[in-house]
Length: 483
Image 1: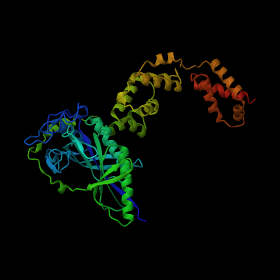
Image 2: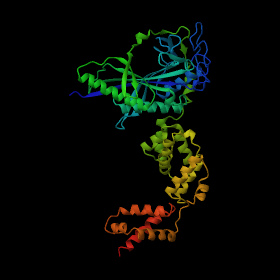
Image 3: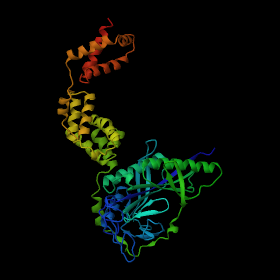
Image 4: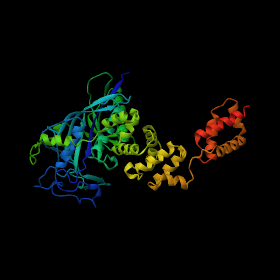
C-alpha cells in the first residue's frame, strides 16, 4: 500500500492594532462600537467618489512583522484591486497587495513533531483591508460594516510543513511574535487572528506538489489541527479509492468534525487583479525602515536562548516561559526580587501558578499578583518558613484575593512550619500506634509505605511539620520498632 505524506502551507490573517482603519479615519476598535454600522464612512462602505488614504501606522507594523520573520522589505511596493463579489465586501473588490508586497522571502525556524529544528520559508507578508461581518438568519443576512476596512496583515508560507504538529508549531510561533510586537492581540475567539490551511498529500519521498484544498477561517489552534488532520485522511482515502482530489475552498464544521465544500478554488487570475488607481506606488525610505528595525524587541528565539544561558534552564523550561512576553517579563521580575534558584521559580510558575490560570481561564494580565509578593512567598518555602504544601495554600489565597501579604496570610492561617521535634515526634507516635498494619508492612520490607505514613504526618500536623525533620523522625521511630 502506498504511504503518503502531507504537504501543508499556511496563510495567516492578523488584524493590526491601529487606532484607525486601513484607508480612512474611522475607528478600528470595532469590538467596542456602540452598535452595528456606527464606525463607518463613505470610504469603508465603498460609496462612489470616496478616496482611500494609507494608514502609516499599519505600514510600520507590517514592516516590523516582516523584519521579525527575516524578510526582505521591498522599498517599492504597490496596492491592487482584488475583485470578487460578496455581501461583506462593499466595493465589490478588496484593496490588497499582489505583485509587490511589503515584505517577502523570509523564514521562521520552528520545532517539528520530533522536537527537531526545521525551517519554514515565508513567501510574502502583505497588507489588505478586512471585510464586513455577516450574521446569517433563516432566510436573510445582516451586514455590519464596523469591521470593514480594518488593517489586515496576511502572512503566507511556502508548503514546507509535513505534519500537523509542524503547522501548529509554526502558527503558535507566529502568534507569539505578533504579540511580542504588540501588533495583534492574538485573541482568536474575537477573530483577530485567523488561519487558512492549504493541504495536499503525495506519496512519501515524492517531490511533486499535488492538487491542494484550502480550509478557510480557522480561528483556533484546535480547529487548525483537527481540520488539517481530517483533510489529510480524506485526501488519502480519495487516492486509495482511485479518485482525484478537486481543488476547492473548504470550511470546517467543528460540530461534526468534517471539512465541507464551499466553492471551487479560485486562482489569482480569477480575481482579476489590477493596480489600485486611487493609491500611488508606495516608496519606503531606507532610513525609515532602519528606524523601525531599531524598534524590534527581543523576540522569542533570542529570549529563549538568553534564558537557557543566563538562568540555566532547559530548552523546554525556557520555551514555556518565553511563549508569552508577559510571562517572560513576570518570571524575570520574580527572579530580580527572589533569592531562590531560577529552577525553583520556574517550578512554581509552571506548576501551581499556571494551573490556576488554566482552571480560572484568566490571562496573566488579569491576575493581580505582584511579582515581588510571589517572590516573597517562594523564598518563604525555600528558607523553610513554611512547607511546600502550605506555600500552595498561601499562593491560592493570594491569587483569589488579588495579592496580599504572604507573611500575614501565614500568620492568620497558622501555617508556619514547625521544626519542634517534640511536637512532630508526638504526632508520629500516635500515627504509628493507630496504624499497626502499615507499620508491619514497612518492617516486612514494603518501604514504599513510608510515603503514605508521611502523608498522615502532614495531615496530623496540618502541613506545618518540616518534611525533612518529620521523615528523619519517622524512619527512626520505625527502625526502633524493628528491634
